[in-house]
Image (cartoon, rainbow, N blue to C red; front, side):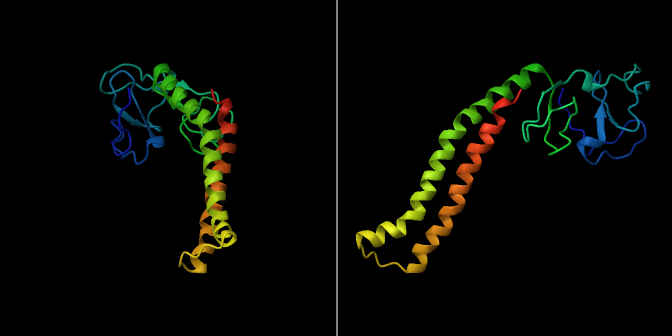
Length: 169
């Protein structure tokens, strides 16, 4: 199940659960509880059964998809706060396929971004070298250099990030 926890009231203490990390729910009946009330020995007041921790049914990735730090079955990465759990194996498998498609495209996309940025940076010099008079100011031409630098940097970052994330599982 994937229910809205943030903004719900804990069924036991009636306190508002402000962010998802502060709450959980009964896996059997989807009743929201705050983490303080959701103890292993508590009884759910709605279904009247022992609280069933949904975390015991989740699927956790071995590594964080954001920073690639080792995950120790926590719902969020302790380093970058990225989610590291999925409601079930099929949800994880869908994410895994999409993630690896992004990783496979990263070298090509990053290279194209970097090449495009270099072309933007080189364009004022190419225009000057060819002696073309296009009637635009020198500040505009040199402004292209400062536009191209971030494009190159983002392209290289995409390549590096894709390479680093290739070991995700």
